[in-house]
Image 1 (cartoon, rainbow, N blue to C red):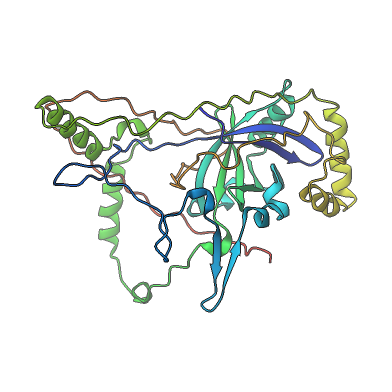
Image 2 (cartoon, helix red, strand yellow; image 1 turned 180 degrees about the horizontal axis):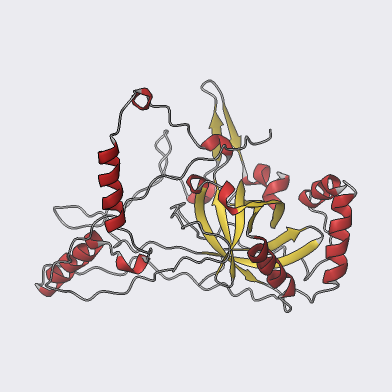
Length: 351
C-alpha cells in the first residue's frame, strides 16, 4: 500500500508518529467513454467561459455569493492554521455504542512511523481495554475533519465522521400515521428473521454485476470484438520518503504529565497551542513528522462504510480475487436485511 499522509496522533502530551493509508478500495471494472463512430477516446478539456483552454496549474478556486466572486489562491489556503497541521488531535474518549454508524465516512489504517512503536501499541491496547473510541480532529485535503480511532485486529483505524450538522433528520409525515401490527404478524415476522439468522461473513457475498460485466468483456475479447489502443494511464510512483521518527524519550513521564494537566484543568490551553503548530510542550515518542503528501490520492471521496464493532471485535477485510471467465451464471443470493441503528443525537459543531 502507498501512504497518503504522514503526521502524528496527539494523545495528551504523548506524540505518536504515524503514516496514513486508505483502508478500502473499489473492485468495480474501470470503464471510459469512446465515440461510437470511430471508437476514439473521449477527452475533456478545461475551458473558461471566455473560450480559453486552461492548464490545470492556472486554475484557482472561488466563492460566489450570487452577486460577487472571491478568488482563493493556494497562498490564501496556506495561511489557514489548520491547513498546515499534520496532527490528529484526540479530543475525548467515548463509549463505542454512542457513535451512530450513520456518521461514518472513509476508513484509514494508521501505521506507526517511529523506530520505537511503544506509544502506538500503548494507545492501541488502551482503546481495546477500555472499549472506547477516541474522538479526534484532523486536517486532510484542505478540510478540517472529525473522526474516531478504533482498533481493527492489531492496527489502529482512523474512521472519518460526518459533522453533526451534516446528518439530516428523517422528517416523514407518513411515519406519523398510526399503524397497528398484530401479535400474529409480529410472531411470523420474528420467525422469518430467526430462520434467516447467521453470523456475518463478508466473504459469502459477491458483486454479481461486476462479475458478469467482466465475463462479458472477456467474451468480447475472446471473440476478437475489440480495437487496438495505446496505454493511457501510467502507474504512480511509490512514496520514496522513508524517514523514520525518533526514539521514545520518556513515555511514562509524558503520560503522568498529561493526567496531571487534565486534573489541573489546563488542558484547554495545551490544545490551543498544539493546534497553532507549536510542539515544544509535548513530549514526543518520536520526532514530529511534518512532511507528508496531504494532496496524494485517496478517495475521490468514495465513502465505503466499514462495520462498526467494539474495539476488540474485527471485521474481515475482503480482497477481491481476480475471477477468470466462467460460463456459469453466478447464483443469486438473498440480500441481507438489518434493522437500522438507533440514531444518537448529533453534536453541533462549534463555530
